[in-house]
Structure formats: structure tokens, C-alpha cells
View 1: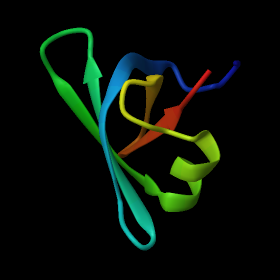
View 2: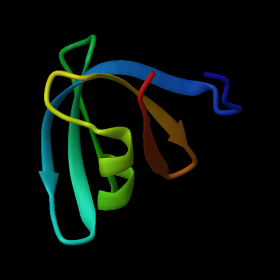
View 3: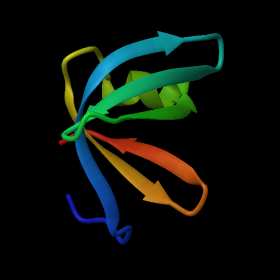
View 4: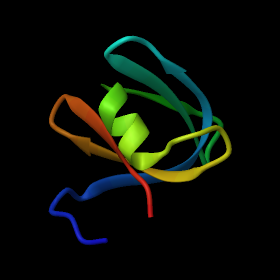
Length: 69
């Protein structure tokens, strides 16, 4: 996957809390820290994100997006 953003952090999904419109995705990164990304429910469904998935947190400006290879 190629992307212009340079702030990409690999991690594992710890939890997905899907609401009516948005999904709260908790990502455990390799250090003892956690990143939380608020993405649309549609994006979470399109990526088929679930607990235990290996993902990449892509930081762009003030937003955190989620990618899955």
C-alpha cells in the first residue's frame, strides 16, 4: 500500500465500539501506548476491522485514519 502520509504507526486492534454513525477503534502500538481513532462506521465495515487485526494508524494533521493491509 502506498500513501503520502509519513506518520504511519503499526499496531493491533484491541477493541471496536461501533455506534450508529461512527466507530471507536482502540489500537495497541508496539510501545506500551494506545492510539484511539474515531472513524466512520462505514469505513470500519469496509475495512472489516475487528479485535486482533494488524493495522496501521496513519496520522495526518489533527486526524488519525486507519489502514489495513
